[in-house]
Image (cartoon, rainbow, N blue to C red; front, side, top):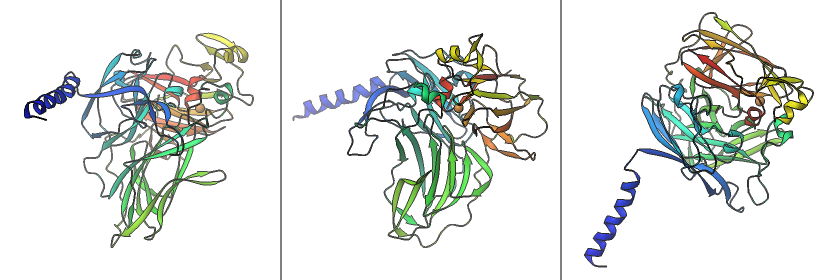
Length: 452
Ligand code: C2O
Ligand code: CU
């Protein structure tokens, strides 16, 4: 190759990316792709994904910073992006019909938001989410503390539940009535991706594990072998006092951060386990190669986020009563302003009601003045658990003895149970409030509240 040719090809090679990036900064592109999801002896899976990967591109931001991205929809159907757990401006929340217009196929939308809180968050599609998320449209969103804890490895573990055929393709049976009316669309393959991948650990090392349950409907219970430490954050928000434990339950959309020391001996391994009814299932097994001379000391709480803990009495209390589902739960309900019986509701794909309404109501569940303290007793009159998620605001559970739980954005309310949540309505706008068992959401379990 002579010198002139080399110069030409170099120029051509440089000009393409420069053009592609000329208009904007970060781009989040949703498209169809193939990915190795199942173990390597299986073929690749056809997925829908962000920036050519499942999970989608890991977005790592700094606390107190700002993030801007252009969402480009290369799917064959409309979509939008929701930044789950981020206390952002309402217009950036990504809920079609409530906070923005749906982004059509080949369309785009500019998202821009600040990141007041450090912690483990995620982003996902919010249009026909029960199918779009199940096909792979989600990714981790990590906001780093100003002063991060002293650790050796920071690993995000993205858990998903897939319903796959024998050739590792996603089953297309979305919206099957039996799934909608029971515990949702439960899969036959549980995946756990470690980001970054880690091939070995040393005894006495300290790791931070950030779990994200991206499954549309499955509740997972994660635990450890050879790792010892504490739960330090839930749904992104630091616990005031760390909790010494070796397991936690994650409903769909929930996150949990652990800080753990490697206690396995050299030559053994440290493992992350999913506790199932009939035993344990190993999600990851990491060999312990050698040892650091000594372990670190106590595990401290993470620095607090700038969110207030609720004090004082609620000014507004509005119960949310869940009804419907299989096993005698569905009687009647309002749908699109019309009072329907069970058979008519089912004909419209509606199986669940919130305060007697199936699907999006015409008016909000409640309207709160900015700054008001709001209480919502979540009354589960169904035969199934529900993972209730509030957009835009974290809440706390108030226990029967008056004490308050940690900040959360998603709370599992078991069958027959009532849990009362309380929050300070600081973030103005129209905020979706729904079951994050996305099959349940599809079949009626959604409402919204307004802070004005
Ligand atoms: Cu994780 Cu309404 O969303
Ligand atoms: Cu539910």
